[in-house]
Amino acid sequence: MDYIAVHIKIEPFSEEWAEIVEAGIVDLGFDSFTVEDPFLNAYIPKDLFSEPNLKTVLSGFTGFGFKLSHTVELVREQNWNAVWESDFEPVVVGGEVTVRATYHKDLPKTRINVVIDPQMSFGSGHHQTTTMMIEQLLVMRRKLKGKAVLDMGCGTGILAIVAAKLGASVPVHAVDIDPRCCRSTIANARRNRVPHKIITVCGDASVLIRGQYDCVLANINRNILLSDMGSYVRALKPQGGYILLSGFYTADIPMLLEAAGKLGLSEVSRRERDDWALLALKTRVQAESR
Image (cartoon, rainbow, N blue to C red; front, side):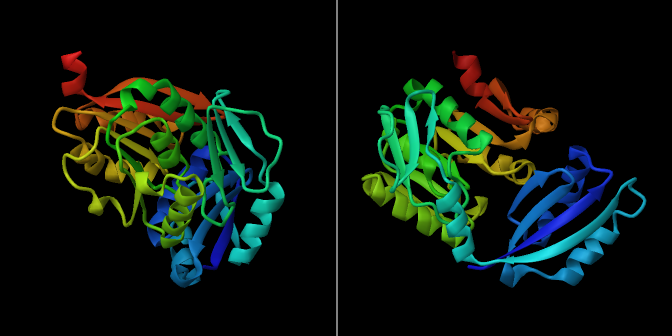
């Protein structure tokens, strides 16, 4: 699948304004974002992109105190693959998990090895949020043993594979709205000899079944997390469970905690790295039973 990369220049630049613009355009079909001062980079499948619609939304920011301009770039899938293969270096998390490509050799021995094919699907283990999610899974390994786990927005399936290798109950469910990510997760599950331990479903939060999981992993973005958090809570078993959220900035923590509190969730712990954050939450029912 070919993608369109839209590079939105924000003058003067601030991460807060980048978040405001991101929230304004996400409903146009953009499914991932990166921020590189002074740009907000937004990515959308080519078939979904409408520049007139984008211009209409961006024009609505007139008078916000910043000026916007943008350029559009066609990003072909094979170009993404070339970038992955040239830039992808192995990642070691907590001295216990190594995420590497098939062509990496002579790596340090760790308890868990995750081998992925670096494709266009997002999720190489390099991003701070993925690293923090793996770290949190390691901390919670005893709580995950034999428990039903959902990897929501699975990308390349790294978190689902780590959860399976940590002893989560079979099968771990991996869900993504992008068919390309689902194909990548299925292939990577086979590559890691856990195809029988992971079921991959293509869809959004509407595919979740009530009362099915002990732990939900969601490394997506702030807007989707706020929109779908209620679905994650309903997907937890009646006796309660854990939800790990990441993919957002530290500045977003109060907003997410407010939404979580309204849904009966309380904070267990948090992680922060380079302005990115992770929240570990649990249902109050579970908290009160401890």
